[in-house]
Image (cartoon, rainbow, N blue to C red):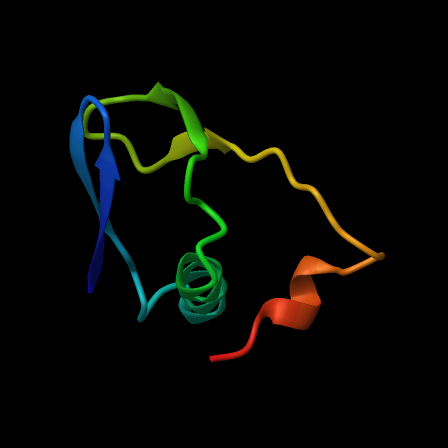
Length: 72
């Protein structure tokens, strides 16, 4: 399974290792579904690396927690 991240500098395909890390993949997919990564800054990408660094400026209204929105 893979996820496509569309950026201003081009697209990034993120391969998900669902067999090896099912919980991490599920959490990532849930965050994608609620558009958590929209307008997120990607500040470190290494070619052929297993990770990228994303910076999200989280703002919570009325003490809303991100975990409250994580439902598939």
